[in-house]
Image (cartoon, rainbow, N blue to C red; front, side):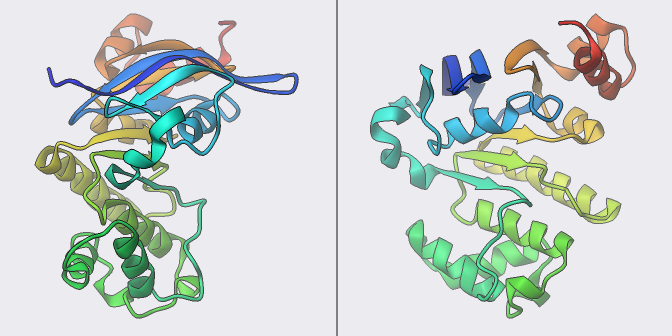
Length: 243
């Protein structure tokens, strides 16, 4: 197997009297897609926010590309990216202008051609000269995904990547990321409530509840362990269980 590209050890975050994340540990390898699953409030978003270096852990450590992000986060920022339908791009700029700005921030060469390529792959060429604020939710999601791959990141964080997309477009997006992962050997951390999506894309899954990892493994191993046919049933078993 390839080397670990992310190493998380005993990661915890406490907000006053609320312990949002409790001693979480896991690894991520190059080319791997790992799902982080859990009900609302399970600690998924807090964990990802710490991995992005946007939130300081109360305790524990995070190494990304062998770099301790608590000390040298800026060394690896150009090698990661993030997408969430709940984080808006500047609404008064066109799609092209937004992607150009992000391309410049990442120091991408031939940025105009790169924008054309990304827009074609994610099927939003016709939206390039439209202001982001005028787009539908599904269109914004596709553009956000385009922003997330503009720098061909080594590590990609995806939060609900197919939210607001119709079934056909969602399937195309999943196919795109399957191909992107293999072509660029990119590692992906995926937070999603779509269990079919997780089963299709993820080679490993982390189940979280009340800030802790309650179980983890491949989708098939979890199905076998809990005696279920669908990952959604495993999710419900863990979410509603006592532990």
